[in-house]
Length: 204
Image 1 (cartoon, rainbow, N blue to C red):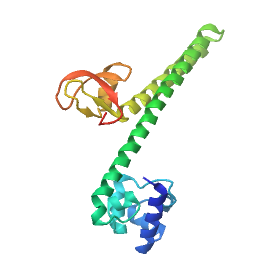
Image 2: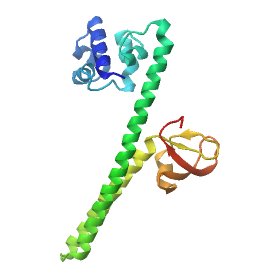
Image 3: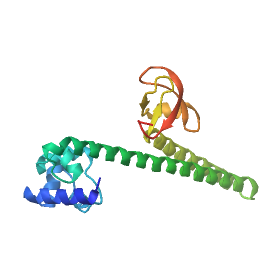
Image 4: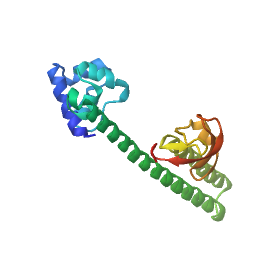
């Protein structure tokens, strides 16, 4: 999706309906700064207000995501292209998130072992040693919680029994036995437990 094109389209339709940025923002319960960001292509409207925004601008959601009014003869083709582009963008974002997860794990592990090494082999008062080790452990746990959250929401897990791909809940990911990103979980489709691999796309 072209955010600049969508932004210009929003601005055009807002003006056609006679709204200022502030008036449109007021009707949507957001700030005029958010509307300004849409119109300059810096961000896109949140999904939770997209239908209401389209109603105010007298356009369809597909018009909004295409950045133009879609004629009926081109509607199916445009819809398909928009959906494909959205899937591609999600997959690219998921890949970036999973790379970030690896970075978080690596850096937090290095930080943990560095602080434990310093606390173990450098002369210091006992209270300082305990504080240093405690701080190292706390930062490591927080980092792992954040990394697990990324792994849960980025991409899908594929059941090795029925092939169903899904996004598990956080609890399932946290408490599942794992080898790397392959986790032993119960499939919500067939109800069987198996080693399930992480997949970026639903079509892989």
